[in-house]
Image (cartoon, rainbow, N blue to C red; front, side, top):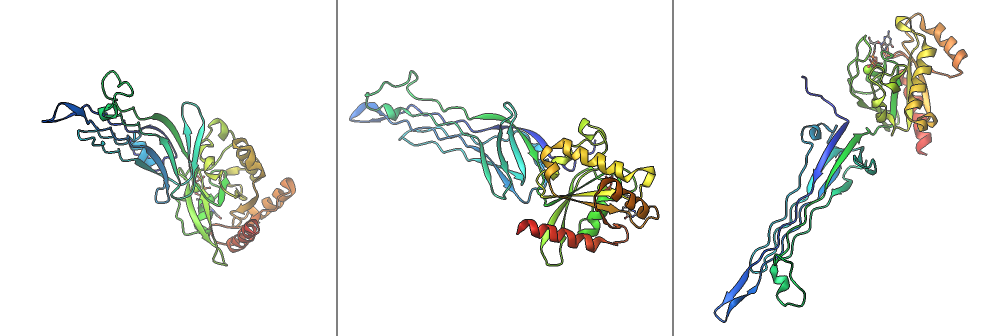
Amino acid sequence: MKPPAFIDSVKLFVSAGRGGNGVISLHRTKYNLRGEPDGGDGGRGGDVILRADRNEYSLLPLFYAPHPRAENGGHGSSRRMHGANGKPLVVRLACGTQVVDAATGEVLGDLVEDGSELLVARGGEGGLGNWRWKRPNRPPPPEGHERGAPGAERTLRLELKLISDIGLVGYPNAGKSSLLCAISHAHPKVAAYPFTTLNPTIGTVLFDDYSTATVADVPGLVKGAHEGVGLGHNFLRHIERTTFLLYVVDMAGTDGRDPVEDYESVSSEVKLHRRELAERPFLVVANKMDLPAAPERLAEFVERTGERPIPVSAETGAGVEALKAELCARFRSRQA
Ligand SMILES: Nc1nc2c(ncn2[C@@H]2O[C@H](COP(=O)(O)OP(=O)(O)OP(=O)(O)O)[C@@H](O)[C@H]2O)c(=O)[nH]1
Ligand SMILES: [Mg+2]
């Protein structure tokens, strides 16, 4: 089986380190043959910490190593020596990962900013050595020392939601990847069959005023995607964090499709995925305007939907600059 290239959801079983044991030891001298308790305490077990790292692209490394385990604390030793504390284990994740407790469904955190951290499993405390009971003012435990406490263990569900400013959505073959190629330097795969894009791709658009925006291209959506038709709408989680949606419509109606129907089914799938996406600002792009059937279809589209799509051809580049200018203006107005 071909190994996956991109993973955006994994189950992770994390174990923090166990605390080291306190020990029993007696320090004897020629004047004190009975000895004096001097067993040291155990060290703390290491914590498991998740950290967002902008150099990570997907959750793939965790798919292959789903059981991170932090170091145990060292045991104490004679002369009241404290055991070494276990090193915390820092697990690096792609920025935009949501951490959910798999048992309760509670969202533990959202690691969006590079370097943000979340402690998910605390290491066990070290046990006390017998020097703590040097003076019998409190009774020692039955064993004469304490064992280290076990570290916390937890099953987590990690879901990566890519961080980008603009999300491209549309029917398969509408030309989303072609449009991303036309407006950025990204090179997603483009081909004349549906579901060419299998993993989300992010490109950066440079506007005329030298500001930039990131654009996410996700796999195409078909009617019933929320019920798992096609590739389903799982990939829509990658546009949840965008501030802007770009609906790409194949205005030439290639393969006998109806642009209005495509647009309506895609926008209803987006809304079925998450209600709040319905309120997200959007622009409609009429793609494939170089094909002869397109202008007539565009007029019909405007009449039937009331939208004002921006006509472009990702293939020839016509209208792409106008689209970038419109995106830049909308973007700047949101940032102002
Ligand atoms: N004539 C013409 N063809 C286009 C245009 N844009 C895209 N195409 C063609 O349409 C086909 C599909 O393009 P893609 O960019 O792969 O479409 P997509 O929306 O990313 O498709 P999926 O990834 O499968 O969802 C390819 O054969 C492109 O060459 C355009 O503006 N004009
Ligand atoms: Mg594509």
